[in-house]
Amino acid sequence: MRSIITVTAAILLTGCSSMATAQAAATAPADATPPELPADHEVLLASDDPALEANKRLVYDMYRIVLQAGLADRAGEFIAADYIQHNPNAEQGLAGLQDYVRRTRPERAIEDRLELPMVHIMAEGNYVTIAFLRAQDDDSGSTYYSTWFDLFRIEDGLIAEHWDPMLKTDAQIDPNDQRVEN
Image 1 (cartoon, rainbow, N blue to C red):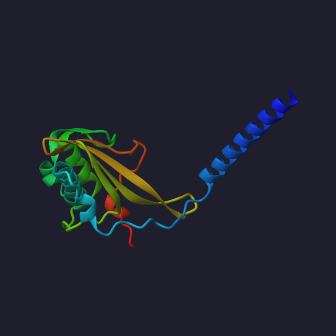
Image 2 (image 1 turned 120 degrees about the horizontal axis):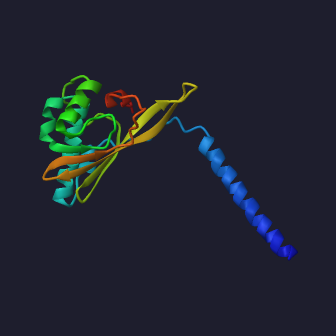
Image 3 (image 1 turned 60 degrees about the vertical axis):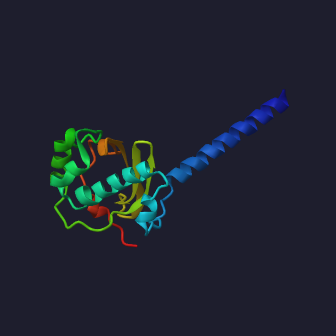
């Protein structure tokens, strides 16, 4: 019986030690060095499947023209009229997205490539996920890096639905403020 209790205690202590290590890692300062970003976006946009490549290009160009350049009037080239928006700070439909873009960023020149700090873009079926590096300052003013994800559903060659991690309490941002110099 004593050996069963000893083994059980050892297992419990190991579990507590692992939890303490995990908690310490969760509260440890994040590395302030940004990850290396891909230089060649064309490689990320390529696919052996022409439909997946077209979906990635649609999202990439929408980001480049509508969100990066702030050209809300061109959103209809990429966004369905009945667009479903899961960002709680933007209204539904194409008009809701256009209003959101006009409210959150100025118009800029269209650049040949997406200059926001894109980490990766992936397509599977009718869905495209794009990930961006996000620089933030903590309470002490130290910069740390996180990731922003957007997920889009494509239907009939247009973006029909969007998800992101935005909360109602988050400040509305111009993603162009997130550019990172490599």
